[in-house]
Image: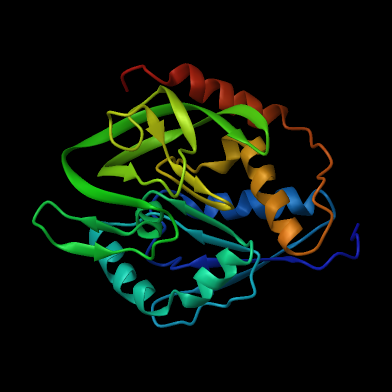
Length: 248
C-alpha cells in the first residue's frame, strides 16, 4: 500500500560498464526493501556521454574491468559536478570496488598510467603486484550503531585513506583496503566506498537500511524504517561470516 511519499530517486551510473560483480543485485535489494514498506525506488541510468542528474537522492557506481573502468573514469571526470553538488547537499553515494576507486582522487596502474577520480572520498589507489581475494568480515559503526558487515573482495588496488574520510570498518577477516592497515572501505558523510561485492547488500540488511534511511532523509521523507523479517538475509550473513578465513 502506498504511503503517499514520493519515490526515492536513484541514479545508477554506468550500468553497462560497471556491472561485473552482480551490482544490479544491490539496486534490486534497495528497491524491494522500499516496496515492502509501501515506498518506491525510481531508477535513472547514466552511461557514457549521458548527463548526471543533480536531483537524485542516491547515486551508485559498481565495479568493472580495467578497460571499462578507464573509459568511465575519463567520462566521469568531465561531468561529475552535478554528482559533487548532490553529495554536498546530502545525497547518498555508494561506490563498490572500481566505483570505490573512482570516488577517490585517482588510481595509478602498474605501468604508471593515471586513472582520474572525482575526489568525493579523500583516498588514493595504486596497483599492487598481486590480487587481494577472499571473504571479508568487518566491524562497522554508522549512525551510532555497530554491526558486522560481510562480503567478498577481489582487487589488485591498494587504497590508502587521507584525513578527510574514515574507514567503513575494521577487519575481523580479509585483506581490506591494502592488506596492511586492517581497514576496509571509506566513509565521509553519506559517501561510502567499499571493495565488498557479491553483491554487498543482500547479506547486509542493516547496511542497506542505513543507506535507505539517509536517502529518505535527503528526500524529505520520514527516515524511520519499520523492521522487516530478515531471517533469510541474516542466515546468508552468518554463512558468509563462517566461510571467511577458509580457503576456497
